[in-house]
Image (tube, rainbow, N blue to C red; front, top):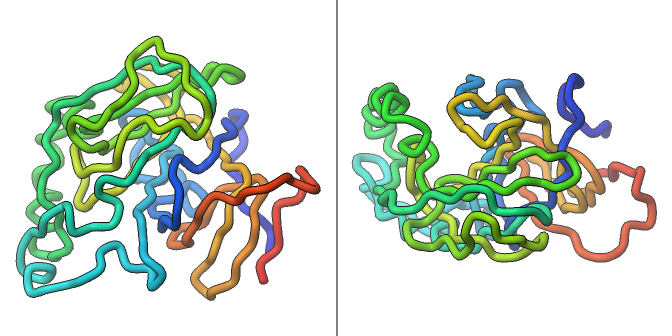
Length: 245
């Protein structure tokens, strides 16, 4: 199967997955661009990840509240999971102090939440991104934002040098988020109000697509609804994209 790559026009920034374990891909730029339906706040090539269990569930249980009401964010597997640096770089900005709100799987609650989105946009990037960390990737000079982080969990400060894989914070449900997940994007500016999105590719990850087929991907963008986790070990052929099996 041919791997999908970001659209041409800007050289993609190469990253590693910023977590351990299995996470489901949502709003992938492999499926559409703009991935989130907008270019606002540099989100053109953004991607979302939600932690899942061996059965592909984002939470270990469902109840009547899942259908009719909100649920505690702590119920979801991504909540509190470590978020790691997807590349070596310099911390250029952090924002903390935004609350982690209740999660929503109820269609009724999702409608109400979406109706409030214009108001959050008017409040500015912090209300949309929630708690976040922005790194500068040294080779490209691009800025990598990881958002919706857990309130009070950020471990780094602006100006700090970090290594790829270093723990930066924990995943939360702050900002414009319906359930705990990690949103990642690359940008050409540190200023979220005027930033333009930049394509990204990930190195060395396992991917399981909907059919159940799996592959080790050496360089690519995971498909929407696939489940990914970091791959370990040397790359025998850096140019190979991987084969499903």
